[in-house]
Image (cartoon, rainbow, N blue to C red; front, side, top):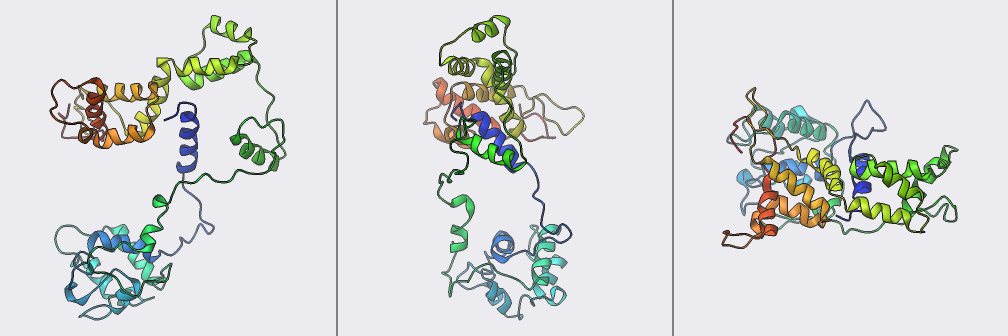
Length: 328
């Protein structure tokens, strides 16, 4: 969690992931596809019996699109383009399948209906055969989250523009140029220290801090200012709040009018603040919150602060509103 990039990464994550993407045709959603939309439903509800077993029940294998069309002992599972004639849809709509209490949601059933109505499309050429048991296909391996992390090429425009101070400026300037705009002139030092201080700590600079920065003519004056603010305990308090918002942190249970107090929730809050202030690596920060208790060796008595923090980090897991109360 490199401090210098934490604010930038947070803003980029919010901008990139924070809103819906408009379809080209707002009146018609794209047809579901087998690998992306349908097979995950089958994997969650069906293929343990109808595909992964050495002998699929009723001879029905739902792991590939062509096998769904082929069907089993009762005939084709679906009729492409004809959802009302598709046996599989009749079974899941009636609640007959899957057996037990775990049923498909209305949204999932609607997804299957749209897929069949669109002709049951599939994105890629399917393999000739599948091994018995749980199978990882090429489509699974191609999922975006499993791809190697690469550094994308930088935009080549405006390399020599004097306004470019860092790589991000190249992307910003490209958008501004397209609108016949350019960067605003550099801020004066009084404005700059106020902006930086509010950004990194949420607090205004003291008058003496402004005066010192304005009159500091050393070439690294700005860098020294940034380092001082990043070293402030208020940095973690300011930027830790963004993570606490994402995690759903609250000091009470929620869900009921009584709203019982979570007496120890503050320990997780302080853990987050400490993590930001210590510049903890982001992968470690995530692992501790999901499985910190598994990262500590027994015995658990007299734990050093670093190991105790790993236990406290798992306070992330029960942060959702809990109407049963009393979680502490």
